[in-house]
Image (cartoon, rainbow, N blue to C red; front, side, top):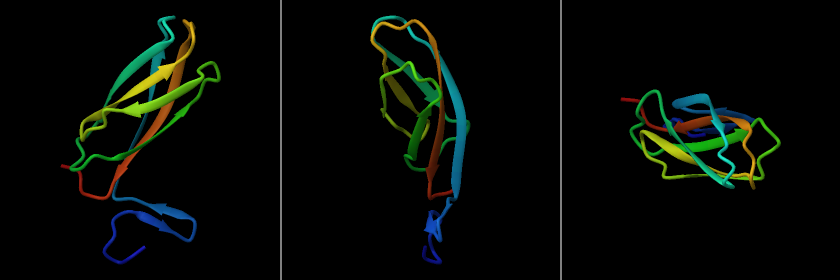
Length: 98
């Protein structure tokens, strides 16, 4: 990591200027495809990297789309489940929060 960097990895440790994390819960609708709109607590100055981890094993796939400085959309594929699922996420960028 260079002296001018605000984010990076050094000696196995992640360094980041701006990190936000939270959990999101969704009751699946039984249609096989659900979405959740997530809004960040604070606006980023640039579109952040987003890492999502599901905490339920019932969902087959998920992916992030429509990332902005304000939030993102979590897309969930679950066949025909109507269960509640929870995800944890981390969003980070290398500029200052507004």
